[in-house]
Image 1 (tube, rainbow, N blue to C red):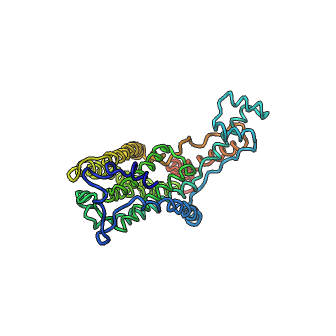
Image 2 (image 1 turned 60 degrees about the horizontal axis):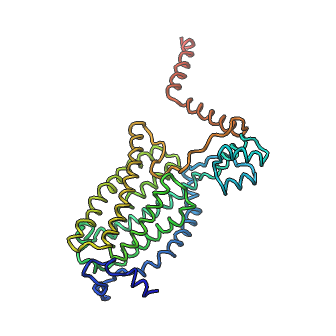
Image 3 (image 1 turned 120 degrees about the vertical axis):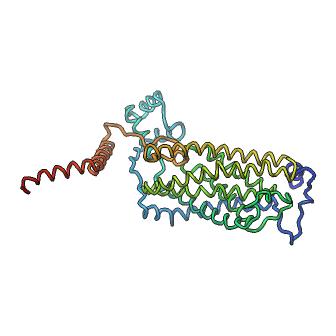
Amino acid sequence: MEALLNEWLWQEEFWLPPGIHWRDTLMKEDEGHFPLPRDLVYTLPLAFAFIALRYVFERLIAVPLSKYLGVKDRLRIRAASVPKLETFYKQISRQPTQSEVVSLGKQCGLSQRKIQTWFRHRRNQDRPSNTKKFCEASWRFVFYLAAFTAGLASLINAPWFWDHKECWRGYPKQPVTETHYWYYILELGFYLSLLLCVSVDVKRKDFKEQVIHHIATIFLLGFSYCANYVRIGTLVMLVHDSSDFLLESAKMLHYAGWTRTCDSLFVVFSLVFLVTRLVVFPLRVVHTTMVVSLDFFQPFFGYYFFNALLLVLQLLHIFWAYLILRMVYKFMFLGKVERDERSDEESEVEDEPEEDGDECSWEQRKGAINSKLASLANNCVLNNLTNQRNINSRLPKAR
């Protein structure tokens, strides 16, 4: 197996510039550590460790924190137990066509109206709660904040942090420090854990883009480590982590109902995201890998593959920037942010209205009407009118 990998996968023309051989990358113990593919063997068990740690974190920290911050879950009606409808819902479709509704009605002895109501209740029942979304956001917030802090501390004194030419000086014979090695391994293990949990996490509007992003990131980190693009790879990770923890914190405040603080933090996130992903990333990082690197070596397969992955990430940045700018427009000209256009909106529509003839739905509508009336009662215009009427009613007595 090792001979087969060496013959097909680890060919020098794939991983090294022309004229460089594997023997040229050998280092003595006092020269440092050259990155090797076997170093990545720890990422898979580390990914499962992250999943276990996340499970403990959400139940011991995130759930109590959500209650403390006032996160409230929407009450939903549970669908009645109908085995045939449940089987159809899980195995065939969550949204039956009109002909399927008629067929199910005949099989279950229910009217079409009740069949449609059952499917609405069942779809709403499966939608994630605010507590679940808060726990997911809080876990990512903790990791991204820790990763950004640790990454910045490890790179602030690195020569390539200030002069990007240092990313390629002496390439590929560049030693990797222990700190940057673990920075790489932890980031790679975390994104691998996100990919493993993508089927059970909240399915969002940009679900496909998120999956592409995770896969591209994993390939980017893995390939860049094996090809010793570690220096530029650390900069890529730092740029991404700089805005991700701001987004997750804004989500947490959104689920907790802290609207003003959430909107203010979202504006800060938008500025950081647009600057780092649309200015710093293409003009500094991508330019360094595509243009500056050619001053130190000739193009080879790894050069094209690595830059292709960076361009995929840049396309995703443009897509998310478009969604963010739409939200900024709503915030600036409409006065509020209604939904998270980037990744906080589920892929399906919001909770669907219940049937008019349903007793429980009538109670829900009555509660909604009462809440609207209560909000109207707090309106400053109504309060002023009420106060004026009270003053006028007291004027005769004052006279």
